[in-house]
Amino acid sequence: MGEKTMTKPEFKMTQAQIIALGYFLVIAVGALLLMLPFSTAKGEQTGFLTALFTATSATCVTGLVVVDTSIHWTMFGKTVILCMIQIGGLGFVTIGVLFAMFMKKRISLRARGLLQESMNISQVGGVVRLAKKAIIGTVIIEGAGAVLLAFRFIPEYGFKTGTALSIFHSVSAFCNAGFDLMGRSKGAYNSLASYSNDMLVNLVIMLLIVIGGIGFLVWDDLTRKKWHVKQYTLHTKLVLLVTGVLIFGGALLFWLFEKDHLMAGMGVKETVLTSMFSSVTARTAGFNTIDTAGLSTSSKLLTILLMFIGGSPGSTAGGIKTTTTIVLMIYVISNLRNSKGCNIFGRSLEDDAIRKASNVAIISLVMAITASITICYIQPLPMEDVLFEVFSAIGTVGMSTGITRELTTVSRMIIILLMYCGRIGGMSFALSFLEKKKIAPVRCPVEKVMIG
Image (cartoon, rainbow, N blue to C red; front, side, top):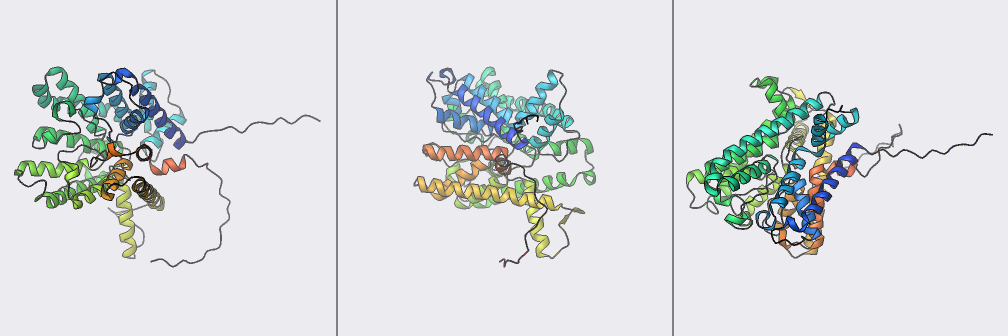
């Protein structure tokens, strides 16, 4: 009798696991680099938790900080942060494809599948072409943003410093990161408050945020079909519709809530700019031109809602995404009207899109509520500030009412986890722990449950 050879089962990581591990490694390397003594202005080693928090916030393009970026870090430290922001914004898989193209290596089918998952698109075909367009577009847009900002920063800070500030803020804005370098000249944690009445800075930063937040798929559709709106895909139409409603509707509400509060005494131009900027930045950008802690309760709740929705799929932004929001709204309205199917713009939504939207929204909401309850239990902090911080983290926004630096070690670890989950996606994070199992073709008996 021949001996039976025992073969070990091959462990093959899923795409969700590879992406989750990839971001984890980028964060780990970034944290180690930030811990080096020459990364800090004082020449002292930064504590592990502070370095980890900063690296996670940068890689997950969030913007929450426990030390002022301009004051605490040296040029080397700031460069590390900028590199992590760029990797986090484009996605480390896209960066990997860029290097492979430079090395003239063939992009494997597995790599294309990873790229598809990373960019959140439905098909593998054309994914490399889209990645190339995203990389080239990113360079052009960030470059244009830096040039425009240089007209303001170079006369104010000199050529060397002004150029560095222009590049950093252009990349940070396009990647929806919210990191700024204004602390040394304008005061720690000041963000862009000194430029609330500056037309150039406001418009450039807002345009970069919006362009980065609509997604690479929309870019591709717009560049190919130009002004032929009827030819746009349903995805593009939904993204543009929701983005427009959120920006202008949010600005109107911010003006209504703050006209007799933080905006009292402002001129017409500054009021319009502040209202628009507050609406745009809340959807995962993280900059601010007014005191976030001083916002009225209504404005804070509005900001939380905008942070939860975030940007669009396949973009540099976070949140549950604009398409998730509109799909759920269409589903609810269709059911209330007893309509057959969920229809919009002459098209029907797939059942799979509705299921996925429900999963994404519920998972993110459960994580945010659980984190809020836990932090409130650990620390005696105002509930609205904790909710603001938590939704800012999971939406990878970076806005804060100022409690980030007051958080304990456990609370900071919770925020770190939320930022990480917010970048890779709550559902992707959950899937990375689950094995794909074959479902037996057997269904349990159906039984009715009373709802409502």
